[in-house]
Amino acid sequence: MTCRVIRQMLAGLINVVALAALAFFATGTGALAVPKPVIEQANGGQCVAEPAFMRRNHMKLLKHQRDDTLRGGDRSGAHSLQACITCHASKETHSVNASPTNFCQSCHSYAAVKIDCFECHSSKPKDAFSKVKEKP
Ligand code: HEC
Ligand code: HEC
Ligand code: HEC
Image (cartoon, rainbow, N blue to C red; front, side):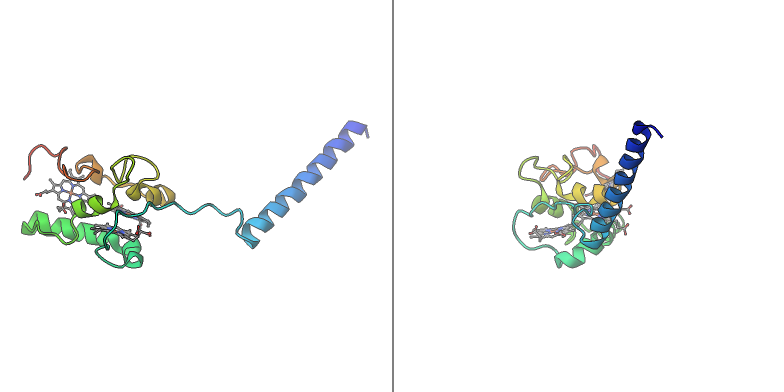
């Protein structure tokens, strides 16, 4: 065996050991686990429900509110999307959806969730329907 081959074998062995150590740390201590999404702080006030509840159920509240508005004509909406945006818009982009760290984006990209809501709804406070030319 040439010196070079031995050196290559040694290098391979070291790689295997390093990988095993990495796997051990990743599962054992969680130190190398995927970082959790950073969720931007709300602009004060209290959420429409407990944050823990919201984390799991916000999509149901939003869809329910939409159905009430579209079919029932209720625009007083306790779970209105505009309200979410007013409290949760980023201080930098003034949006919930303009940069990867913005409120409605951070978790969704982490969880690989895609929403189409902001194709029609503005992601910024106030001009909620700037993109919807004609209200039904
Ligand atoms: C009056 C302001 C206000 C309104 C309106 C509001 N929120 Fe919140 N929301 C908060 C606050 C305050 C928290 C607690 C966490 C914080 O301080 O950032 C929170 C937490 C959350 C969380 C959990 C975030 C986490 O840290 O895991 C979600 C999800 C959420 N809100 C979604 C919504 C949605 C969707 C709506 C509209 C239906 C909405 N919120 C309306 C203020 C608000
Ligand atoms: C094709 C355009 C379009 C898309 C996409 C869309 N919406 Fe809407 N949405 C509307 C229109 C139009 C209204 C009615 C506005 C009105 O009558 O005040 C509405 C109303 C609502 C309302 C009730 C009014 C309010 O501000 O609370 C909610 C909640 C809502 N939509 C949530 C959503 C959510 C969540 C998504 C994504 C899952 C979504 N919408 C996607 C067009 C759209
Ligand atoms: C704390 C993390 C987190 C935040 C913040 C968050 N979401 Fe979500 N959202 C999720 C997760 C996770 C799912 C997927 C849940 C599932 O598949 O059961 C989801 C799903 C949704 C869905 C349903 C998508 C579908 O395909 O049916 C809508 C609509 C939605 N989110 C809207 C919003 C809006 C609007 C905001 C900002 C106001 C927001 N979310 C903020 C974590 C979050």
